[in-house]
Amino acid sequence: MRTDARFTRLPAEEPRGVERRPSGWARAAVLGACALGAYAACGWRARAPALGRLRYPTDCQRAIGVWSRGLMRACCDVFPANFTYERVRRGAIARGEHATTDWATVPIRNGSIVYVPSLDVPAFLERFVAFPPSARVTLVSGQEDVGMPRELWGLGVRRDMSVPMRVPLERFLSDERLLHWWVQNYDLVGCNPYSGCSQLAADSPLARKVSPIPIGLDLHTLAEKLPPRKRQPACEQQAEIDALAATLPQLRARPDRLLAPFKCRQDRLDACAALQPPAGIATFFHGARSAMWRAMGDHAFVAAPRGHGVDTHRLWEVLALGSVPVAIASSLDRLYADFPVVTIARWADANASALRVWRARIERQFGAEPFGAHVREALTGRSWAERIGRRHEADMGAAVGAYMGGGALDAQPFLPART
Image (cartoon, rainbow, N blue to C red; front, side, top):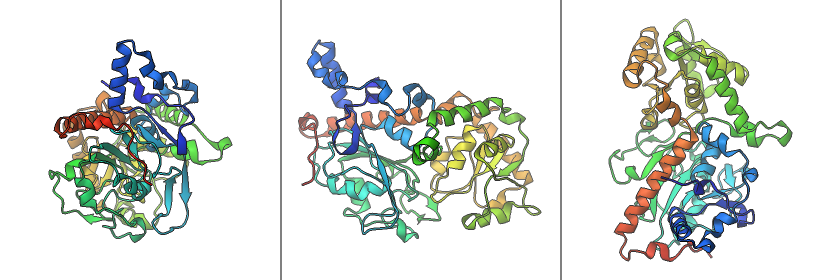
């Protein structure tokens, strides 16, 4: 059982714009010392700031849907506090969102869960290769459209998405110092239009070391990227979704109709051609976000074409509102299989008879009301943070048992900075 210590921040004077929490093994040692009355060993807890310092209240974090930055703060021991957007590519620095963190020097405790934004992976690898053999870390990556990890390593058609890597992908995944890697826009196994088809078997040792995570809801645009006076906290956005969802009928009472809530821009022309009347069956709608959410709730099925990456925020919005997203089969099929999602080979497969088949299939797999407590919980950031934490603790336990030298994993609490 994970303790609330994972959700406790260390003091504001952490260097290099990074926040971190005590690692799992450090927490166990400290809690054990506390039980024996060794108060001095609990210094990290005593130094923790008041909850008011958190950007979002803990109660909100525990009820909120999965979203990139919320998950980052909930699951990881080390994560960036601030980000910047590079508008042009500069050598190994790709265009897109980067942490302001200096990965060469940031304190990383052995046995940590570390959040490394997708485009910061090259900089982190420069540090990773210097870790001692006894080091063990779990990584979580996301916040960009690049396919992970294949497209980032140049195994895709969008050359602007790849960056020079010091370590070959197979070697990095084989490294014992990497316990596990959780990534958004997963493309290690399966096919998608951006990085083609992987030849790696799903049950291979390398494939088992990487797991997909959702890109989830887009709460960060309004919560963090607008000027301060225009921002809307993630809690308030989630409250809007919850309030609307409470007014919607259950899925079984929604008509067998397909909504296409998007514009027919260049990257969605195939979906538009197949779904628009007279050949297609979809109702097209695009407007303000609140109106679009309401329209989604009026349909049993909602088309969710991929975005600039393999995953799309729209799919997770649809699930949050209790409708069934329809998406093209991809390397994310493994992720979507746990939710009431319909995947099809091509948009032309969406027709009137298919709607009835889809409903019957969803009800067979998830029950007459597919959006029960289990599915709703699986859509929360809390659920994914706990999933990542459980896997990390299991991997750390196995690593300690297997490592020649026993306690050597704990002998060096902080991993060396790169010089």
